[in-house]
Image (tube, rainbow, N blue to C red):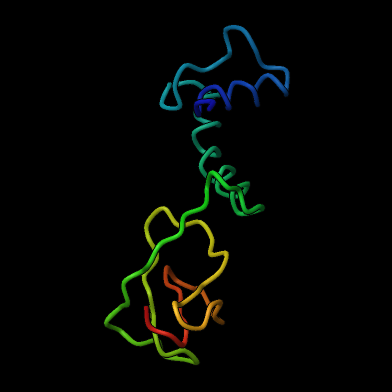
Length: 112
């Protein structure tokens, strides 16, 4: 898989920047490296949100929060720090569940 720097250099190349203007690190003190560093994570996450990529999909069981949601649903589950989007929420008995995601949590009617 291509590194962040390789991806950024490919993008720079697409807009006509090459040779001595290529970057060696996102923390490099150059205009191009700073531009790549400012945008890379945001654009990567945007692309990951746009499709259900097999390589970027995790199935996991979340631990319920001790704080009940204040509306519509009975249970709240904090999302992991590397979460980008929720595709589906299931429980062991009912299969797919109605859910809502907001503020770093997913809420639903069923407990884990």
